[in-house]
Each structure stands twice: as C-alpha cells, then as structure tokens.
Length: 359
Image 1: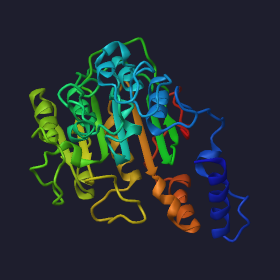
Image 2: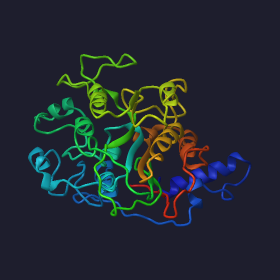
Image 3: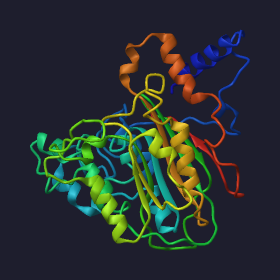
Image 4: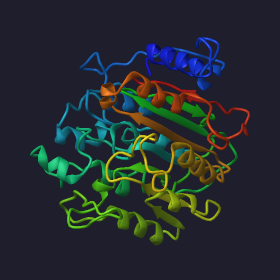
C-alpha cells in the first residue's frame, strides 16, 4: 500500500462517482493520526513479510526470511532456531499473559509469513509444513514446521482465564506486496497475569500444511505433510481434552453457522492454498474478509478482559501482471468503507485502531 497506490485508488474511487478523484478519501484516511514507518531487515534494506512481521508483532528487527527469532538466527539455521534464547515473544503472548483472548484472521495461508510472526519461531518462512523443512535438507524432527507450532506450541496451546475488564486490540493488516495494519483497541499489559487457552480464533487458508499427503481435504485436495499427522484433528482433540467447546469450519456456510455465543475456539481453513481474491472467489464457498472479521470479533468480545485480533488481507506480487483498473478495483475492496460489523463499536476509553503497511 504505497503512497502512489493510495493516490491512484483514491482517484479511481472519485472518478467512479463522476468526480476528479481528490474530493474523496479512503476509510482509514479519516483516522485522526497519520505517520510513516521505515521498513528494513537487519541484513537487507528491502524487507520481506517475515522480518517485517517479526518487527510489528514482536518489536524486534531480525534477518530476511526468519520469523519470531532474533538477528542471531540466520536463514535456515535450524540449530540457532531451536535455541529458545534466540526466540522473541509477540503481542499475542503479551496479550495472553495479560489474560486476554487472541485471534488471527487472514486471506493468506494461516502459516504464511505475516500471521506466522505472531506465533512461530523459525529460521525459514517457507517451512510451513514438515515437507517444506525436508525439501531444504533439514530435519523436520529438529526444526518444527510452522503449522505444527501453531497447533502444539505456545501461544497456541496455553490455557486461558479471564481477568478484569480492560481494553482490546485489533490489528488489521492488508498485504499489497507489503501489508497494512488496522488496530482497534488498546492492549493493557500488566495488572492481570493469567494462564490462557491460546489463540481462540484462527481463520485463513492453507489446509495443505495441516493434512497428511495420504488424506484429501474437504475439496478433494491432498495434504502435504509427510509425518502422517492430521493437525486439524489434533487441534480438535486438544480442545476436547481441555473441555473447551470448539468448531472447525472449511467453507462460508460453516463459518456463518458458528454459534459465537457458545463456541470458545474456532479454526477455519477455507482453501488448500491462499484464499482466492474476493473478486474471483466463489461466494458460496469462500467467506469474505468482513465476514471472517465480524465472526472473530463476536467471539472475542465475549472476554471481559479484552482481546487482541490480527486481520490481514493479501494481494500478492502476481497482481502486478493485472491491468491497472483490475488492480485498483482490488485495492478499492480493502480501502473503502467496510460493512457494519467489520469493526467493533468503541466500548473502552482506551480503544484505538492501527492501519499500517509493512513494506
């Protein structure tokens, strides 16, 4: 979401309504404060989604292609990655330590670099499944893949208890060869230190990293895991062992049918790979980003201790091959007014929103 992209989108929006374009503004341009961020990796001037994700989730600059680790870890250095002293904690961990609920919503694979910066510690952003680790001649038994970390490791498997009423935070992150963040709510760390149930809402694409290569998913696509693990079933069993109500969904009907009042944990994987562009998606099978976000908010706002929610919409580099008008239409989807329910109404004096591009 570069400044030229925003200017072009704004002009396109105005011209669609018969104006020159400068008379209108995008939704987040009406926020009270605007700033610029400098993005870079420790070892490269031009950032990627991994080092930038670590920066905005964890507040630490690290190396290109690595997630949730310090700059001591170079890319594909499995041994350095396994050393917990090289791990850096994210805002999801801080939120859970403060007794708050947490969630991740994305139109990418849920194991992609942007969301994975919140929960994984890995020497390579591409190690999304154990097959990916093995393809780099690394040992998947030693170098835990990102999908496995989401299901088995903290902050995904910790135990949650509610604390005293505090703020909540939403980060909406939109990827445009980089990404943008929207944050709503203030996160208070301190005052309450509690165990957490982990990440209560996980919605995105990327079923393939969670299913074994011997099993077809709900749409007939085989998983890619070579260890035989079905991490979706494992996620469900883990919640059942803890006596927590949970729901796994894979399509729009399933998402819209979730009882947000009674469901404590929600996992939604809506595509084998990344979710489709909204303009190209089958509306009968894939939910929209506003629908996913609204569901997540309904679930998380039940926690009186507050919550943290990360929301990302991605447009990858292949978009560069599209015509200008199609590109602008795609940008327009994510920069104009959102439907009711996309953002929560202010309910706390410290509530805030952040909308930011990472590179």
